[in-house]
Image 1: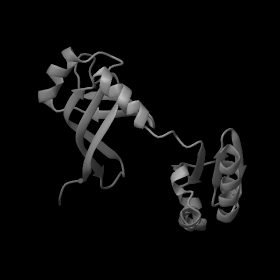
Image 2 (image 1 turned 30 degrees about the vertical axis):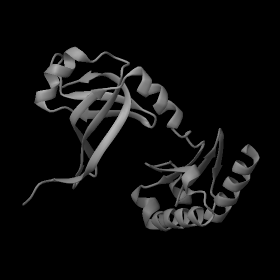
Image 3 (image 1 turned 60 degrees about the vertical axis):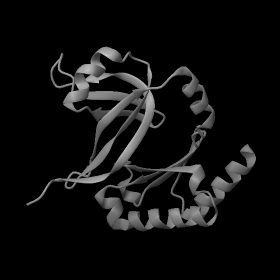
Length: 186
């Protein structure tokens, strides 16, 4: 039959330690890490669990090396650490200066079955191609969402520029809105 997990790649994450998680109250199994894109749960091997429980404090800056695996059927990614290191204060100040700012423009594309059947995948590829042609792909975050509750007008795509929402736009209109948004901000 084969394994249900496919090994994706190794990862190197840096963030703030939020605490330990487990199925039972005093049994540590996962480490919770705050990174710029959100909170992440990372499974700890048994060898690391006992030494980390006594040495890490909540809010500390840590660096985690590990392996990411993809569940073949569910499509979820499982992260497992093999090394956890603390980051000193000097390293933290240097790393904050190097981090790029988060893009304030976001495109949310519905990935439910109804939207996919009505051309959602084509919309996504057209959108990526148009943004790439105009050099805007690195300035925008494309997020795959669940149902946006607008199934009658599928395929659904929402463009968020700061606090404004734009709905029912074609890829060329989205690209021109993004160009005008970024030129006014600079």
